[in-house]
Length: 245
Image 1 (tube, rainbow, N blue to C red):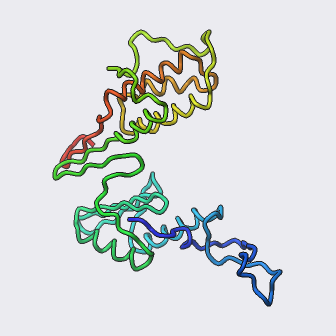
Image 2: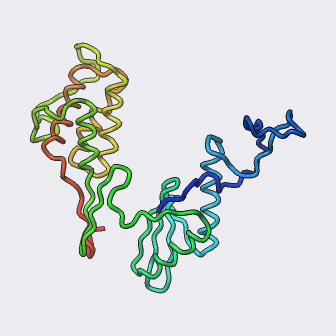
Image 3: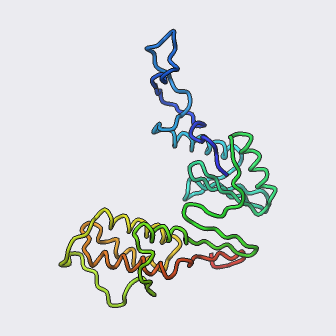
């Protein structure tokens, strides 16, 4: 579910004034400014104003906000549950009862201009494959984007993310490497660890050296990426019925 022009729905409490748009100046008051009633795109208050509007809308309809994640909302109806996750203007929702999903779609469409995206397949770099008894999350496309960005899609694949005898030092002798590039690679890999615990230790170890990365550190990071080249389809299975969570 996508909210069209979401930020325009936010109500701002501060007094904000803007110049009259070119070609739309008032002939009676050409030197006056406009006072905003609602948020506009580009206004620093706009994202928070939109969140407050949606937050109030959901709470007024008997939703409960997550205690850890303020963008997660839940509604319990007898033995059924409806879960709503918000990411700016994108809204994911699911329920143990299809009727609750239909009702939620209806109340949202009545309040905001919406476009329905159908069943979730891809979101924030995650591929979501839903089956009858399980759901599989992977980041294959995200990995391919990393390989392409750093021109490593033709590199030699590795079977492990890090060698068993490697010793990374904080101040090793060796040539310094581009700090911005190194940090960028670490950033890409850290996001990937949300779904790839097999690289968690290696990435976090390499992340320690972002202040002054050397060639040895960059080589270790590239090995992690070469490991991803050989394992792009690894992900996490979430079985429908499990006592593991």
